[in-house]
Length: 366
Image (cartoon, rainbow, N blue to C red; front, side, top):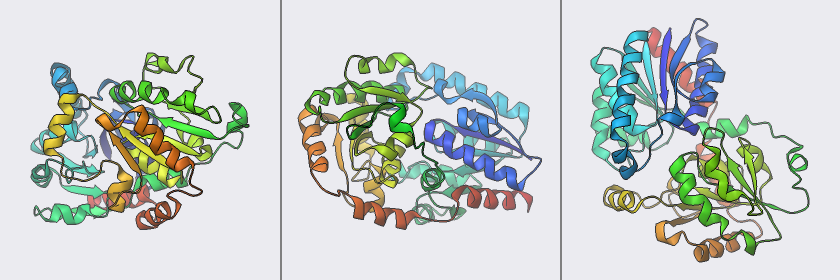
């Protein structure tokens, strides 16, 4: 069968790549094409467009790039029609993929959604679009099945959270600290995100506090898909930049400052104490304040349904409050470990990728 996948950022690329590997076990004649990243390509998908050319986040950022986004939609629609897959598998990336779901469904394609967009956080009525244009949804949050049922959409399977699979399957490099000469002091990791806007907003402000912690090594987790110029502030800051080795960094870190997103859950699964930070344009934040219906922004707190990790958002993300939050976790003997373990046990399921792939394949061959 022919599978067309669309993922729009780094975590989606990783989880979609594992799904591809699992689908290959079931369908030896499987062909894969779509939009994504290096991980999906390495897993065997023909990459029609890389997500580094398609990632826009925030209301203002989307607005100023509308013409480019419209062109991207046209390219994707044309590619989809030319390839004629048996199924379109959408991976998170709500702004783009909800529109592609409508197009694909109206053109007669079967549409699956893997990793639901976070509609329960804001724009909940968009769940009606999922009901109308998606044949089946494969959820990674345990509460999403009940959420969609409120809108009369019951074609939802909870398959587990793929972050746990990704971390559990990771094999750490035992020579990591030696390779980067990080043996003599504990490490504080900075995870500034995988999108241009995130790194630009987060990195410089975080680096301001580094001189106050000479007893630690500071390491930035960079990603190769972003322009190297984004990491220019790291130069001459006393901070080391390490590209595409985030899991090895987390496996060796004493604490972390993490941009809100999938990385907060990954950090928790590695049992690393963290401070969650986030800053976006004033326009985007003002709109989000009106629309967002959840109390927390980090996945750790959302899934725990209480504040486990400190969140510093917008004006609260400043050197004084960041240092206070970081000092708190550095001075505790075992911060968050009990809560992290509870969260892990709450989310743990058998192989998520295999479960999702099996459910998808069985529905396709019925």
